[in-house]
Image (cartoon, rainbow, N blue to C red; front, side, top):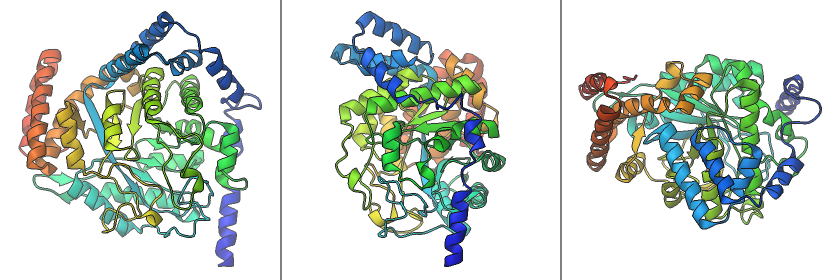
Length: 498
């Protein structure tokens, strides 16, 4: 036991590479200036409607907004102007991503952690947490359920920060996930894109993730406010180092992982400040690497086991403010994918899709081993926080279809080289939406045939027929090839894409 403790302490002590922070900095300050952000929020309170409409025109041109422009939008209170902002956000989503929603499932592989985050059920001091790390055969079982019974093609694989789940475990588990193939009704089920949500890694470790073929690499700053960050991440832990976390996406880009996901945990500090922090982060990546974030996430703080600060948070985000922040993120960083998770209720998720959200999870379980085990989903001692929407993927997809959205299971982009700068350019010009429309039709047909219930097939086929008519009208040069590939899918061929 003493040797194990000593090894863990040594692992912690060598985790942070100082030179992999300072190399990206200009002088002694990082790119988040708290006073500057607060000042811009204060100085942009009196902006007239013409100026707001000029800002909206810039968003419609798929240009990243400036801090002053974003602050102005955050300060809008006039209902008519808020409605105009929401309408513009919806138009931008349609322009950039067309009429589709991407679905995925989170897969938690362990709940061991060396950190002490005050808002998290996984923190090391929580003695009520039932600790577990999935062995590779258990990872296989979880993946078989997700890919073979539910029908997911994308996962976000979630790791804590602990020597037991270091980079060797991460790469081995990713390989195991990709190796799974399960026979289905008409084809086979497999995971085609494994995104990763993990603690900040070194450039060397990130290169290893790149080699095993991960999709997007996510690290959320949690809060961009320096003082609050220190308060909720106790000193002496790895996570207490604000800048090691802040510059992780820089290291990811340098390591060759050019699809990165950023986010903030709304409720730790003032939500307007956090939106500004996300904007500054996106602009920093654009300036340094020419590539902004592939996705932005905006989870709200939810109750967690033995975490008093999550029960009645000082900065709790009201529903109307949440919808506003979603709108402003879409307007401020118009090209990015926006992820709303099952933390939110079904109703809130319905309302935010029209405001700009493009991705969501479904059939979600966040306990360790939860997909292959039978247990009550909200069993708090096995998961990180409580969920707001636990509906099945089939139920969610049917609702999307009834709302007029097509569910896309496309993973073609990263296999065709449409990542990083390439996909940023395609998104900003609206061309990526064309590829996505075609691939959404093919992959949705595949999912309906392999996994869809009778009711969902009826609703889904109505959307497919509508989308095919749009292709014939708007993209006639692709229509013949689309229908040839569509027939191949109907005949049982799988994983066909443009």
